Each structure stands twice: as C-alpha cells, then as structure tokens.
Length: 468
Image (cartoon, rainbow, N blue to C red; front, side):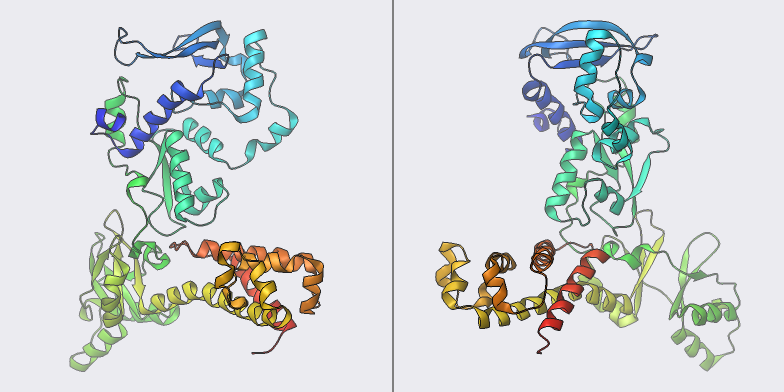
C-alpha cells in the first residue's frame, strides 16, 4: 500500500516508512512508555503512556492521521537530566523506534515517575563499546551529515557477528538497516569485502519540511536491496579494488622498468597528470619497441589498454583477460580502481577451490572409516526416516549425520582413533557449518580461522588414517 501511495520513492525509503507505521499499528502496546523530545528552546522531553489502540483520524491534517492515544505524564523533563547514552538513543533517525539499549525501559519509567535518570547498570555500562547494529545507528545519529560514518564491508558484517555476504546474511542486514532508517553508499552487496561504505539516512517521512533537501542529499544513494549479488562481477575481486601502479608518459623508460623489476610487475598503467589513462607499458611492448627504435621514454612504448567497468560480468571478460594478460577496472567514480591479470584469475580459482577440495577430502576419509566400522543398517538409521531407503553407504550421509552417528561413546570407540571425542565432534560441527555456508556461493572468501579449521581437520584425519 505504501509503495502504491509513494511510487516515486526508493525501496529502502518505503521499507523505512513501512516499519515505522507497523510499529505504531501493531508493535506498540497499551501502557508502553512514550518518549518525545520536544522542539522547544529549552529542549525538554515529554514522557507518557500509550492509552489506546491505533486508529486513523481522517479529520486530522495530512501527516497526523495515524494516531495512538497517549496520557502525558511529564512534559518538562530537562534534557540534562538524561544521561548521554540514553539521550543519544533518543536522537534516532526514525520518528518511531524502540529504545532497547542500556536498560532504557526501566530508566524511562524512572524518569516518568521521578524525573531522574538512574543510569545504566554496571553490566550494561561495560557493554557500551560493543559493535552492534544499535551502536551503529547511535553513531550515525551523532555524526556530522557532511562526515558520515565510514567503515569497511567486513566491519559492517562484524556488527551483526557475520563474516560473509550469504543471501540470508544480506537479507538480515538489509532489514535491520531499513528499520533503523539507514542504508549504505555504495551498496554493501557490491565490491570487495574490504571496500569502504558510508552509513547514510534513507530519507525523511513524507510531509517533513526537510524532505526535499533530504532526498536531494541522498539521490545518489542506491538501495542495497536493489542490487542482489547474483552475478560475479569484476568489482568483487580484490585486485579490482587495490589501485594500480602507474607511470607518466613523460617519465624515463628506466623508471618504468625499474619499478617493474622491483615489484615483479608485468605491466604498468600509464596515467597523465590529469588522471587520464593513456594506455599501458609492458615487457612485451618494451621488447617490440626495441626492435624498431631506441626507446628512452615511457611514451615511446605505450600500447592501448582495455578498461572495463567494475560492474561487468567477470565470466564475460575471461577471454579478454587471458588473451591480453590483463584489463584495467574502472570504479564507481570512473577512475582506475585496479587491474585484474591472468595471475589474479589463477589465484581466485585457487582461493575458491581450496575449501571445496579440503571438505571433499575430509568427507572421503570419514566415509571410508565409517563404512569399515559400521553396518549398513546402522548407517541408514542415522538418516531421517524418509531418506533411509536411499542410503547405500556412508557416502550418502551428510556431515550432520556423521556427528549424530559418532556422538555415542560406544560408536566413537569403533573408529579406534586416538583423538579426544569431544574436541573431534566440535571440529566436525565447525566443518559442517563452514560447508553449509560455502553452499551459499558468495564473492567473499573464507576467513583465516575458517581455512585453518578445514586444514586442521583434514590434517588430523590424515594423521590417524594416513592411507591415500
């Protein structure tokens, strides 16, 4: 209904308004406290209790027709009587939001009754510095609009306790950001995981006097929900975001060759004083030039270089990269953001394939030993009943099935592995979780801890059963 009423507004803005209206209609309960910072010179705070259900008042002016009755208890609470942590939470980017941090409900009740904020408990105070979505919105509120919060996509994921952009993780963050009145610029779903994004407001409620200015300031902000990471794009590769080493056309050729030798580069970008890409210099172009004349400047050995937008499909560029050895990548601002080479593609394949190879070896080693130690009936019994008739060997089990099979001590002893039972099951469960996450193909690599877990698990299996 909101989309129909405001067809020109973005998905993130509509989600923001929808969440606030839903809170007013369904989430707010009678007897809940309401806190309203007043727009007065003295900047006082009003506190009341909700005393009635939601209703629509068609006689009220536009922007004031969605109504909940409130009995106002205090209308003159000084702002300086509220401690900074709670006051920051009251300055939400949303008109309607739930105050949850630092025992807000109990403290607002105390303010209503006595006009004094008792402050957070010792335990809550210690958690003030924890990186959470709630802290993120608090910092966004306090930030200067001209200097928004900037953090890497990896740091943004960490606020939710996540490490990779799986579909489920993206959906959870998108929902929370919309409900907090925030979005990212550019979308956090795009680019390498260490790229930096800004945390910016989605926009104002319809009818606000500042709405036009707000929308103008965020007109270049793209909704994260409109850019699902379906296609693997060039910009999702780390080298496409690492910048490029370059020389100028007027530089001596010796400068280019020295840099190429020192840094083991096969080519360098040639960028003029105005930041324009003029081409590239490579060992091949230097060699070709020496066949016809004596080259002394970079300008003598420049060859054309292909540039590709960061949003281009990676697969469509593979032939060109393998044919020429590299392509330069243009970022969102159209400057050269990086270079992708054939060596990078080989490295990308290795990074992508390695976890699957490790998991495959782990499963093969588990299958072999379980088939030796257990009967087919025992193996079938650990699978769900509907699947048992399809189980012909341990090869048909999942890693979760293996854990269930090996949990009983008497089953574990049959393997005759000199390993700690509890530690083994814990590592097996970690590997299971990593495997499940890998099945949600994302552009983000496993972190070092996950790779170490897989490598260590396979090394452990090789040690107790060294057969190839």
